[in-house]
Length: 208
Image (cartoon, rainbow, N blue to C red):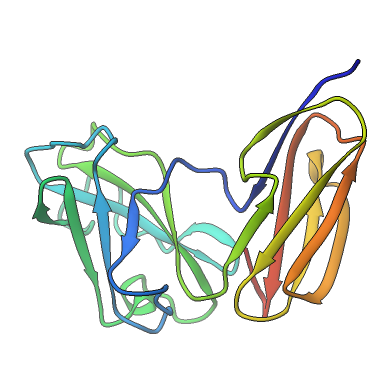
């Protein structure tokens, strides 16, 4: 019996998110927004001093673009406002794209590492969605490790915001399945190899 470990993800593999938006849904890139950071469960929980955001955006599918300032530069990188307890916020205005200096392209995520003033204590990389085009893996669970004992593994994903084009890649970037013009993607992985599998959905030039 051959047992293989399989991890299936959508988008980048990151630590559990500590970021959220004020209000319902996700802001569009041409809108102002308020970003909330919850330090609970991070190395910054209970931090007595000011916290700063090392931050950029995912632009046209490329992570960490238009980073504001440089690491440890407290005069250039945004400071968070304490809300009490472990909660902090950042007001992003007049719009997300203006705040990050983006003049062209599609912003689909904000990337962030929250740090203390000295820059010697920090969170993992954190990401939060921008815009209402989103991708959800329904089966199996995202980031799950499966022990395969033969047969195939069913994969089911869906997106919001209308029809999209899907690609499922296996270890090494091999394309295993694709689908055009649908909001629901269903396939199976036959005889899966050990490694990471990734689903990408693309809509109007924006990829998740």
